[in-house]
Length: 478
Image 1 (cartoon, rainbow, N blue to C red):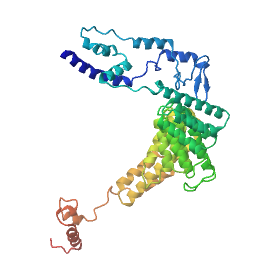
Image 2 (tube, helix red, strand yellow; image 1 turned 90 degrees about the vertical axis):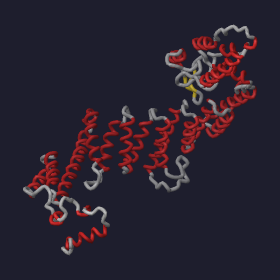
Image 3 (cartoon, rainbow, N blue to C red; image 1 turned 120 degrees about the vertical axis):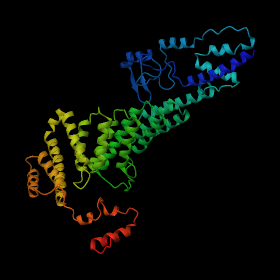
């Protein structure tokens, strides 16, 4: 008897873990690669017609489906093959016989429920004395609420079809509130955004689509929502370009745009598109649009950043050639001169080589433009080396000056800068590579020491300066 009670405790712990692990497992009717549902959808997809706000519908088949053949909302449609699969899963193994009357309904019942997650949960809760709550749809009140939500949604669809968008919007909102956290609520949220869109209330529509993406991470409406958002962002960007204003200039007369910063909202929407659907068909378009906006604005550093992102993150994008070509121009315009960092020129040189090697066909179409850009990069590099050489020549560091003048002469032969470099080298021919030591006698005063200030490391700085000043004037006693 004690052994059986112990086994009950062990198996109860085991089935608690099994039940919790199975509770999040996919349904037997989930669509999988090569499953009966997938094959059925491929065979019948050509006959499907799309119903706005509901999904795809097939002749003589009840309910609606998404683009992969999965039921939408409370649609119930099970294929014959799936019925057999579910029946096979529900077939319980034969429980071992037991002569112990106390064990009846205990060990045997739990083993029988091993391959049935729902029954395992029920058996565990029954063993613990817990009465599980019924799902909402299994209660009369839940069924009434769902029927009410569906009825309201149908009224909203009718109003939407009649282009009575404000009235439809309110009905969609009521339907979603009547059955929250459901596929019906997801449908309603998208259609609310559509109502805003078709009444030209673009700020509200954009906000609604953002809300949909946040509440339903894998929403089946993501593709359609980002298409709407891209169109809105493009409109805001073009509106600002046609009539530019400061970001703090208020807009009180046009409901199609925000009160402040129309261009800024366009850029944020482009970014949200990329965040909501990073692998979608418009993600690279959003990045390219952002880069182009900054390029036309003259913010070439920002434009270069987004052109670089597109080249790296979306190698298959149709905008690759433009991202290389415009990115090259952005890098050239980012360069500020010989007194500043040369990295933009180095990157531009690399980008030119990539452009020539990756897009030979398109390069031929834009040969003149690309050759001018390449010449501009080479000229900037040549001027930088020439000015660096002149700097060292002015300091009488002729070894470094010769090196840079020679670089110009070798890399850009036949140019005026190459001729000037050769002439400059002739002016200091025979000069030493480094200038003579001006204070040789001071260095000799500290043999084996390169820096007199380091001769006495523990000496205060003020005393060092005073002592060295005396050495220079010849008044020192040591």
